[in-house]
Amino acid sequence: MTSERVREALSEFVREREWAQFHTPANLAKSISIEAAELLECFQWNDEADEARVREELADVATYCILLSEKLRVDLDEIVLEKLAVTRSKYPVETARGRSTKYDAL
Image (cartoon, rainbow, N blue to C red):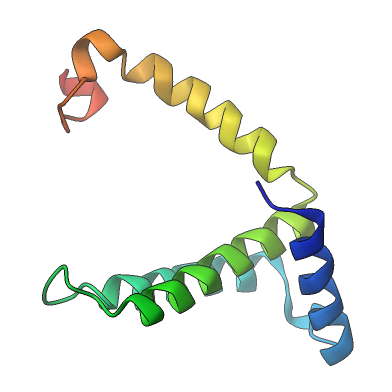
């Protein structure tokens, strides 16, 4: 999911600025939420968001997710696939296809 090139670039960026001291799990989780809100703000009044801004905000969300996964020493690919397996069982194709109903109401 995240290439080694991206992880190394982020690590170097943080190291050069000595920012790791600020990257506690709580601070990174807060940053994910803040950046996700900024991404949502792009769509606040309509679905015609500025593509450049959406890309920037999405990159910020992804960056903090990667940094948090590194801090917690979890493999993003692994946890996404694990969660997908759980979600797959909650939303069987036969009952969930084409529906946005929550799993406990299917």
